[in-house]
Length: 239
Image (tube, rainbow, N blue to C red; front, side, top):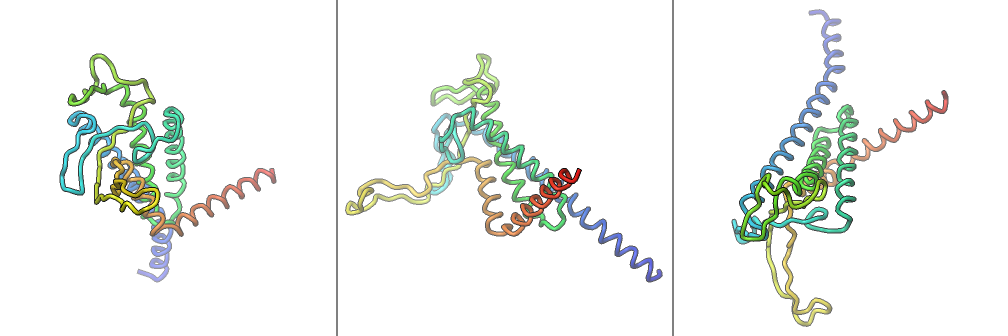
């Protein structure tokens, strides 16, 4: 093989390599999103049809499955109007998907960064299904009865007003504050009393990865997108 042929092959590899890597990263992101959503919804449906509301199953002293529902944000927080929150989630997922489509074509961004954004996207999308569909497809009986999927008498709420299902509970430790402590003396305290679901965990893991390992990729992606927007604006002005 001539030296020219070797050079041509190397050039072809350099040209095609980033494209192949980006295509693989795109597929990885799609698979991550699909797997997280499927696992999240399967677990939620199983919990809702096998646990009555507030039922607590102790796996270990520090890890429980406890079924609760909430109208609000991650970890049971309730800050906004329900419909506003649901449509806000839908808008946020749309923006995240748009960002993913943009960044998968950037070969200078690492695959781990794309996976991190995919985890955040999947987590945000997972809770949307609860809000949009669960009010229509589940009833909401009083304990100790468990919910029925597609009940003959209809669901417990209208479209977009379903409640989010949470189940992971980690009561790592608890104690009473000493009586001499100002403001909280003598009060009971439980470390990490929040109850959350797989979608919440996916968002938290994605954000943690971005902060700990991919902050430079995030900055680079933002800079590239800003430059592109400025270039587009300049081109429009020239026309």
